[in-house]
Image (cartoon, rainbow, N blue to C red):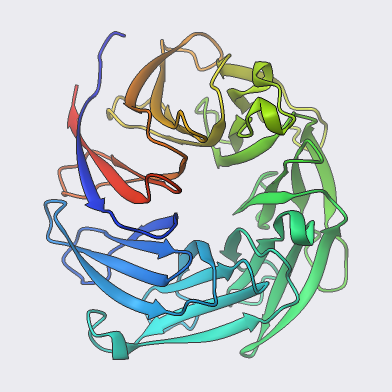
Length: 371
């Protein structure tokens, strides 16, 4: 692979009961992001970054009858500080955590429920002003227990649920972005069992009008992907991981791929053109995109789940519609799942952070040393 990007691997935190759910946000105000990590059977932590990627663990919340996982960072209450909006999977809840004072002190943190029990299998969450009233609302997916996408209207501190779509099998990823460029925030989603990559068009008044559903692809087992302008034409494309489950659970590894979908300027007319990044990536779980080497072109980072877990980078040769080369960051990392990018040491280059659950149960990061 030409122009190989050099990375060095580091352990951020090990010893989780079940590691799933990570984000990066500067909680200390020192100019570099810290990490927020969910330990699903125990609670929620944040890892204080000393500016060089050395981390000190702080506890936000511990309770053994919850299953906290994926989350979003946003200023929900408008106090100028970041809050954490998170799912509780086993109880079907959405919560948000705020702090007042020193975030290192556990007593500084308190939580509030957005909803309790009416989102079975609460799985992924996105935050945006969907109704255009100036405050932040929340959208979420319901996994295979809930099989739904819903959004929660923030109305003067009360949260009102509005269904986007129900009876769509195993809803997973949900992301807020303006897909059609009309100034309103739409939603991107995946449904693994329904084999659908979808986007929902914001009608402008989503309280009283339905979201319009558009199919990007009838893809086998879409798991996690993200909106990104892959080709630099100014509109929102989508990078996606297809696969995850092993053959003994009814999967076909021939369809385990990393792909991207091209928004050709008419996103409501599907399916979108599909471009292969990696033809065969067994147990593909999540794909994200960012410019890792600061050359103005987008790279893709992907994780693979199951016993042969993997973290890999993909770089194209000048045209994202053409050939992509793969660079392995870590192999045999059992059940690698979520992955993000952030500049953890302030050197102007994006680093990579990923989590791996059962049999690994740790969060690792890769320092970007440049080309």
